[in-house]
Image (cartoon, rainbow, N blue to C red; front, top):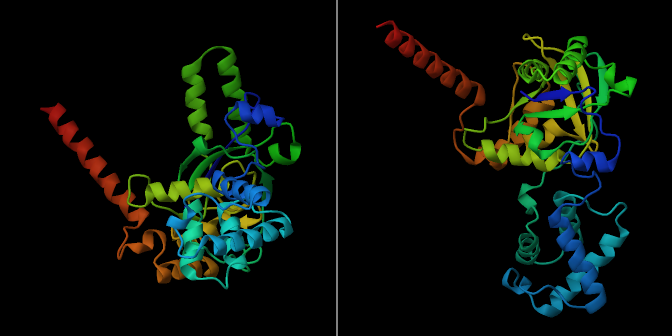
Length: 328
């Protein structure tokens, strides 16, 4: 399941970059530190004609050959419109520019900057899946996602604007009413009530794929991967309908990329066919299994819905034992 929790209301309504940053948000245009390191070294090479110290420990070719790579990379970087902003984009530029060079050198250069290696990159489909669920109910844009709001590999809290009717009108009425109630409770300094209402608000969500829980193997990796994809970015959310629990089914896009596709192809989520039977999702999971990326490096990874069922039963047994003990 891909759960997207959303908050809105008078208590939080950032309108500028400064407001967003004061709340711990990253500017959308800010480059990854990994990409910045490569950009810095390219421009340093332009001025000094010197390659970075320590690179020779990661590659097999001479300093002269390394200088040739940096000349080519500098030209490719300048020609890129727009230039790379993510580690994946930077890795693709390096791989494409140096595709005629030795594999050991290309992979060594990527490793030197901590960029993704060729076998970990995924080829994304163009645009949305071809078999979309029938009937988009509504669509909204979020504020940039803060890393602290990402709960796990398939859940996060996002913010929408209450001053923009195009966004606030898409938020369910019960959530809007709860927002007003929470704001009033905070004015009255009734923080116990405000916190209870807050919990009610964040129970609204969206579903699609299922990632490992944080306590499971690969759970931390799934959360880190989702963070890399959406941190500091505004999301486009397409809501199609409700599941059997009354939660909304939606597709999530980030910088035009389908987030469910990324998580499936990188091997950090299962296709949850119970809630979404699109063949593309099944195929993307199959591709990840075949290349043994992410959690598929394990021969038989435990499914998160089975893990939750098992741990729920354990919790029920503990409660029963406690009740019996108190009964004595």
